[in-house]
Length: 551
Image (cartoon, rainbow, N blue to C red):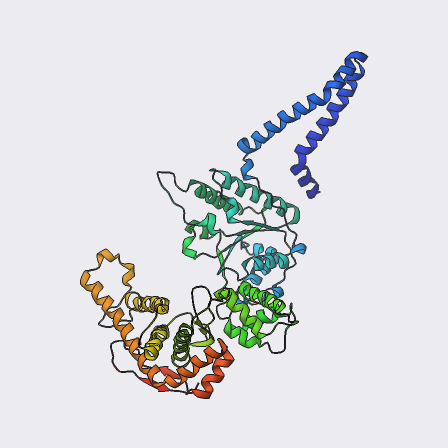
């Protein structure tokens, strides 16, 4: 009965129009039957033209009315999606174990709503999913709808934005009206708003009137969220954002609105293994594919990026005429996605050799001296503007960086310059990007992280530069250069002492052009020594202390 009422409520205009047309046709036929034959024939002959003209007038009037009187620009054309049509269960959401636990709790609260209300509690009305792009926020929202067996309405924040003031607010009203009807008919409804930061960022108030459209849209959203307190509106609003929580307006996050936050993070090692296993099931895989190695190589990759790697690997294998996807295809796919297409430029023998020694310096320093990262690839194949590169990733997830790690990053960045200088007594412009990286790290260590010397502690970037004395800025810059000079001194000394392995690495690159993790590991194990760990991070010390430990 409720569905019949909603049908008449939604379509009463159409029903009235159809009935009016039927009555008018009846009256027309009845009127024509009363006329004499001459007048009846003349009326019938002119009737098509009168209908055409009347139709054109009606279309112009209705169009103007919808667009200028009824907010036609704000028309929402979103249809509901049944929970059975979504059919995404929590078991289909790979990884996100912590986020899934919180989502399951929300579903359980929805199912036990009667018990919650009995003790005087309230069902969660607003949930916001926060995390990096491609981590499964939309998929998790669909899983909540499926598990709770509720219809699902979805809209993106950018779809509310328009040039005309008031259109976004109109779309918000229409969307919540549609959600209320579904909740009335089905018992409950989930409303999902993606990219909530588009309409939910901190409001601006200016006498010039700037940001009025976004403000009015957000104000309407706040009003609608407050309206969900009504017992008859069994609607749960789920929003998703890639932005930092500080970007969103505080009024949006206060209790009673989006008061439940579910944070979604990048997958850890085990979750990346599960993701690779899941997506590799969709393609034919060679026996040599090592999922654990792929998971270690894909540190800080999102689920969407891992899926894209497997899709690209399948394309690479097809282009190479293979029937299965192997490790080389996946490695090529990662390079293509992260680094771009191979340029195939022609280098002179001298330039090619110089590039090989440059990359060998990076690889040797990274492999033996870096405390957290490992070498996954070294190549002298050009990609983009780079003639060669050494790709490295952390061996495990790190959420902070200590002084030892930052010093090692600088040393690795300067190793290419050092290697060129030792081999040829000169350097090339290929060190430009390395210097940019090294100076940025050293500058941040001194200006932001308090890792310089002489008692300069604090984040000096928080203070406007014009408020800092010239003397203080000079001393901070001196500390930055002290870090760079010491790191270069360490690298020069180390590579000079270990030049035999640098030379072996360069020759291997000249022969094969590209070395993967296994090739590098085999080469360094055969010709190199045990890995070393940097112990001295005192940037003003002239002593270079290292201790040999087992790899």
